[in-house]
Length: 446
Image (tube, rainbow, N blue to C red; front, side):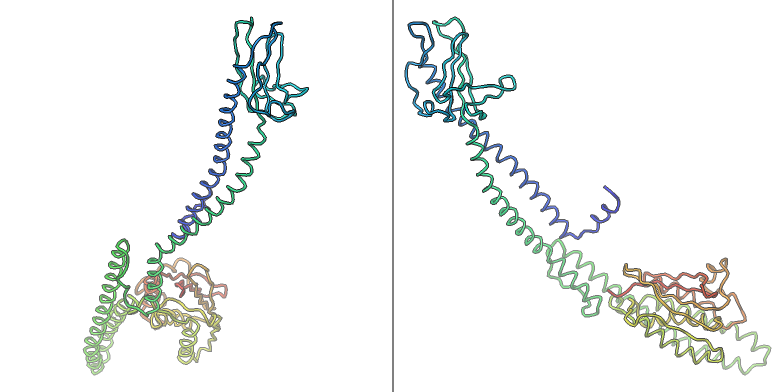
C-alpha cells in the first residue's frame, strides 16, 4: 500500500474506522450471501429433481421387458403424464446394442450428449438434469443403458426469481444493520465527543476541569487529565508568585545600591555600576524565564498579532523617532495565535526593538499561513543584518555582536525560549531587503 494511503488510514477517526470496518464486513457478507445462496438453492433443487428422477428410474426399470420377438418394450405407462406429452421437458430413453426405446415426449428427437457424456440435452436442445444407469436382464446379452432427464431451465428461472427477491432482502438487511451499527458507534463514542467538547471549553477558559461522569474505560484518563491540569495550574501560579516576590524583594536593595553608588566618586561609581547592571540583567532574564511557563490559563490564551504589532510599533516610533524608521504591518487583522498577549508582546517587542535598532529606513512585518495549525510571523529590516556564522550564536544568552549598542544580549534568547514554551520556534536568516529576517512560528487558535 502506498505511504500516503497508509498515512491517510492512520489519520482516520475512531468513528470512521469503526464504520469503515462495518461497511467492509457487511459488504463482504452480503456479497458472499448473494453468491452462495443461489448456488445452494440451485443444488438443493437439483438434488430434489434427481430424487424424483430416481423414483422414475425405479418405475422404468420395473416396467422394461422383452417381447416375444426379443425386442425391448415398456409393459405399462409411467405415472407422470409428461413422459407422454411431446417436448414436455421430461424424457427417458433405454438403449441396447441393437435397440432404442424412448419416451413419447421426445417425439422425433433423441437425447443428445456433449462433453463426452457429461452434459445431456433434450428434444428442444435444452440442458437436462439427468440420471443414468445400466440394467442387466436375463433376456438380454448386453446392458441396457437407461437415461432419464428433466429440463434444467425451470429450476434456473426459479432461482433467478428467488434472487431478485433475495437481493432486495439483502439490501434492506445491509442498510438496516449498517444503520444500527452507526447508531451503536455514535452512542459508544459519545463520551469521547463529550470529552472533546469539554476540552474545547477548557481551552477557551469556560471550564477549569472535566466532568467526572464518564464510563469506566474513560474515567481514569479524565481523572489523570484533571489532576495534570490542576497540578500545572498550581505549579504555574506558585512560580509566578515566587517570581513576583523575588522581583519586589530585590528591587529595593538594588535601588539603594544604585543610589549609594551614585554618591561615590566617578572612578568608583564606574567600577561598581556594571556589576549592579549585570545583576539587574540576570534578574530580568530569570524573571522572564519564570513568565515563559505561559499564562495561568494556557489552554485558552489567544492574542491578535496585528493589533500587538501596531501597539508596539507606536511605542517604538516615539522612542526611535530620530532614526526615521518606517514599519509596514501587512498582517491580517483576523490572525490570532495561541499565545498569552503579554508573552506575545515580549517576543514581538524584542524582535521589533532589534529591527528598530539596526534598520536603515524600513521594517516589514508579514506572515505565511502553513495551513497546519501554525503561522509564521516574519519581521524583516533593511539594516546590515547578521553574518551566517553568527546567526546561531546570537540566539544564545548574553551574546551581543555590537557592544556599543545598548542592550543586554538576552532579547533573542528570551524570544527563542518563550517560543519553544508555546511549541513554536524562532529562526533567523538574511532578508531579501538586505538586513535580518526573523521568522517566529507559533500555533494558531483553532
